[in-house]
Every structure is written in structure tokens, then in C-alpha cells.
Image 1 (spheres, rainbow, N blue to C red):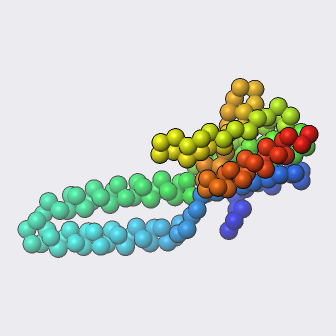
Image 2 (tube, helix red, strand yellow):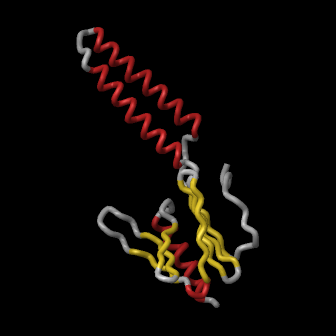
Image 3 (cartoon, one colour):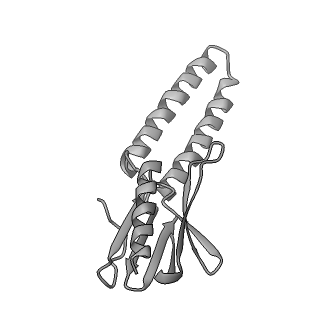
Length: 160
């Protein structure tokens, strides 16, 4: 359900963008895939062990343990979101990462929007600067949408 877990704003914003991760499988299907991979891997390992290659079993168990940790990390971050909104003379950046929610408010007239250009193996980043402190936004957005958000936000902040 889109928007689940994101708190409502206290006032009607002039500008609001929400960035979320793409959770295409969902929790139930993610663990079903994990269970089927466990059955397949351990079944093959038991077959090889029955034929005398018993060293396959510890590697199969190690593989499933690493896969479990990866799926658990994905599960923990599946509901992460970010929201940037402009309400009156405030720019509000809210973020929830792994269940920890943060909120930063900036003065609209003193906030600067920057796009850090692509570096090797890193996409461009949208940053908001206020009083010497920078906050990034939109890491989950595609680069094209991030550029559109930056353009629209700059235009809105310039129209004072």
C-alpha cells in the first residue's frame, strides 16, 4: 500500500515529494523465495553428501546463512521513505531508515539546493544546505526524477 507508515503533514504543502524503495516482492513472498532456495540448496547438498561429497553440506549451510542475513537486511529497509515538503516559510525533510525517523526543518529563504555531479560508480545526489549543514534527499529516486525534483525545488525556493 503506497504511503503506508508515512505520517500526515500538519498543513497543506506547496510542494511535496516522497521517495520510497521499490519493494516488488513484499515480505511474504520474499520469505517464500528464501524457503524455496533453502529447500533446493540443502536438497542438492544432501544428494551430493549421499554420493560421498559431504563437504558440500557446510558450504550450503553457509550460503543459506549469508542469504538469510541479506534478506533480513532487505526486510528491515523495505519500508524506508523520505519526504521533502515546503510549507509556508519552512522546508521540511523527513526520513525513516530502519525504523528510525528523523525530521529536519530549514528556513525556506536561506535554503540552497545543490546537485552533486556523478562520480565514478555513484549517481548524482540532491542536497539541501542550510547554515552550513547538508542533507541529502532522493537516493532511491532515479537520476532523471531527482533532477526534476531539484529543478522544481530550486524554482519554488527562488520564487519568494
